[in-house]
Length: 107
Image (cartoon, rainbow, N blue to C red; front, side):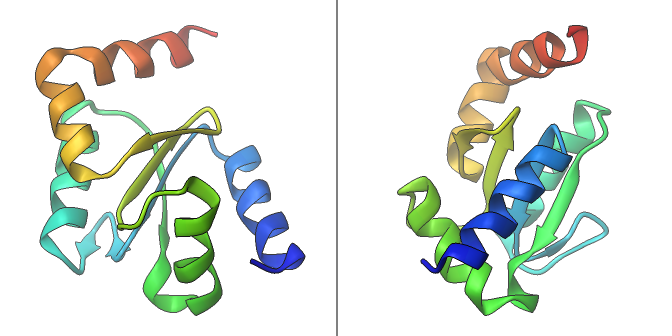
C-alpha cells in the first residue's frame, strides 16, 4: 500500500468514529454482505460513515492490507477494526456490538 492511500485511510478513521468500508453506500448497498452490515448499523440507530470502495480501487485493495482482513465490508469503531458482516452479525446477536457503540458514544 502506498503512503498516500494509507494516509487517506488514517484520515477517514480519524474523521469519523464509526466507519464502514463497503460496496456501495448506506442507502444503496451493492452486495448482500454490505447490505447486512448497513442493516445491523441502522438497527442500532447510530450515525456512521460509509466509504464506497467501488469508487476507489486504491482503497479497495489497500483496506484489506490495512486490516489484514481479506473481505469487504469492514467495520471500524474508534479506529479499531471490528470485522466483516459475519463478525458484525455475531457481535450484534450477542449484544457486544451495541455495547461497543454505547461505550464509544458515552465518551
